[in-house]
Image 1: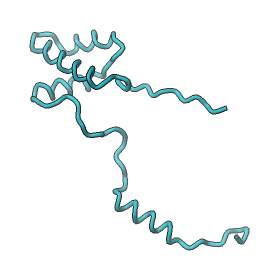
Image 2 (image 1 turned 30 degrees about the vertical axis):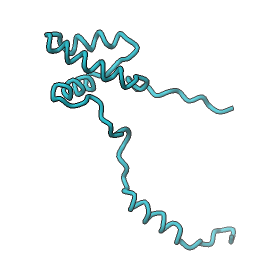
Image 3 (image 1 turned 120 degrees about the vertical axis):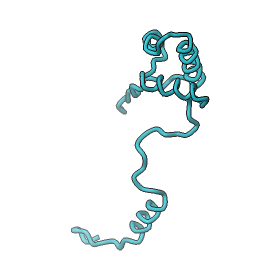
Length: 106
């Protein structure tokens, strides 16, 4: 029987993009009205769509600078250590490697 994998504990992993944008716009608007982002964060995180403080502040900063709060670029995860061309070299080296005899003589 396969082991059941648990879902990651990412704070906003299941939050729809439209909610993320709305949250950033609302937080920016309330900030202009004198509501601190920390107060907004406390209230927001009592909902099903929690957000990390750093993310909220970055998104509000983007709105304040006239930029979209969400990037179209995918940036998740660790950057690759090798470029595509380097992977091609590795793959070529593996494919060209002569088979070495093993202990069983195969």
